[in-house]
Image 1 (cartoon, rainbow, N blue to C red):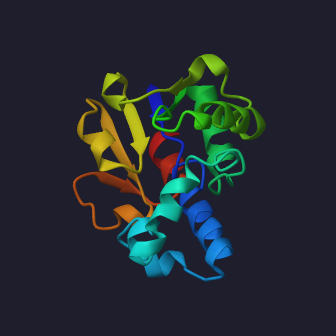
Image 2: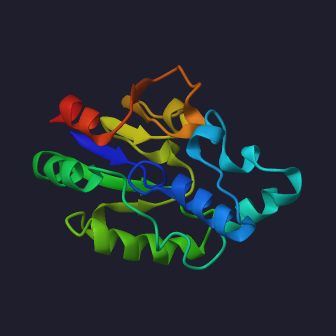
Length: 173
């Protein structure tokens, strides 16, 4: 199988990073639970939304992300058995290109650079499976669509959902 895997909120915890950065900046303690069903930006006061928007354009934001639990182990096993590609819509934030590449080198060195697609729109992907946290990307994919759970997509019901990497392992290995 040819499997495409998104980065942000699928193998890299950008949601947690947004919360951490926000809480440090404003000396708050905003939690995932308080954000359920929405983006972090939509859970903060109006005058602080720009701060959240700025995270993605700040050097170091994408480089310091924490890998999602079990993603490294399951992806390594998937890569042995299947054709695995990392597909991230990285063009929106140009500084993320280098940082995401470095991050993948560190945490997913078994995914070669030739299998890393840092793109704009994901509608160009052609394969068997797409694992993504964004319904927009899944709508346009022709293969099996797996929605990876994130606080922002909890109300999405149009796709087969996976809550963690152990569930992905059961489905695809």
